[in-house]
Image 1 (tube, rainbow, N blue to C red):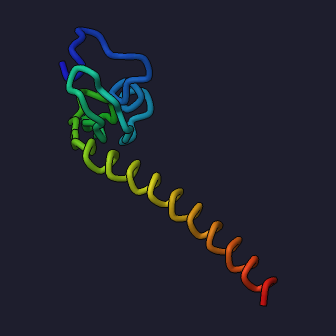
Image 2: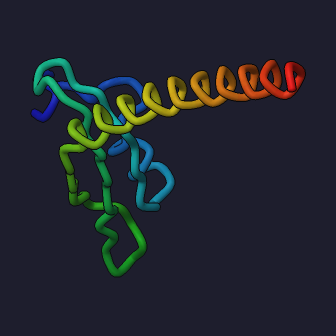
Image 3: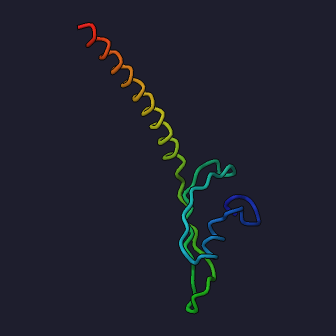
Length: 96
């Protein structure tokens, strides 16, 4: 339902959870919902230790991912500026 299909997608966290009986978290980029989501699936296990369902928790992390990308771009620019300042400082030190 989340990704607009009636079958699980490849490498679906629900399928992994059901197979391993462990909580699975995964970042999912969803074009239908136009965003990036942190999907966590918690198994529901009966008294016999058998899987009978799951709880999905989905958090929209689109803004955080965009912010991180922008911060990385700024970090690269800052590093380039620092290298240029070091180059200029070296030139100035050779002149004095």
